[in-house]
Image 1 (cartoon, rainbow, N blue to C red):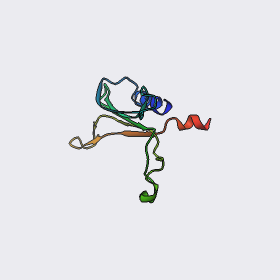
Image 2 (cartoon, rainbow, N blue to C red; image 1 turned 90 degrees about the vertical axis):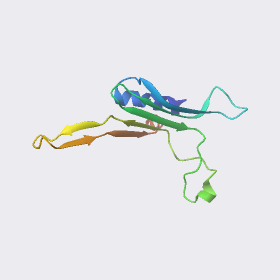
Image 3 (cartoon, rainbow, N blue to C red; image 1 turned 60 degrees about the vertical axis):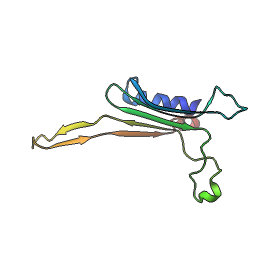
Image 4 (cartoon, one colour; image 1 turned 135 degrees about the horizontal axis):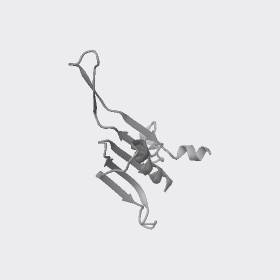
Length: 120
């Protein structure tokens, strides 16, 4: 629950508002024999009123991603739950050269928001 809930909250906190549209969602339930009302993994992308996009990924059963994949592919993954927030593009005009402008996009990536709680 914690690896999902805190990630769901992160894009809302970073962008300071609630999403207005769900762009994509994927869910994988726990295997048969375990609680089918519990998600084993999920991913979601939302769009926010300011044009920002918040994406989260959490997988309690992720494996692999280690050195020597042929030997370690069955080990639990070291990947932590992740939240990514991409702000909308902004055009910035150069104050000294009016014909010049720059387009910027800010991206904030937060890995395992729960990790601070484990420390405490």
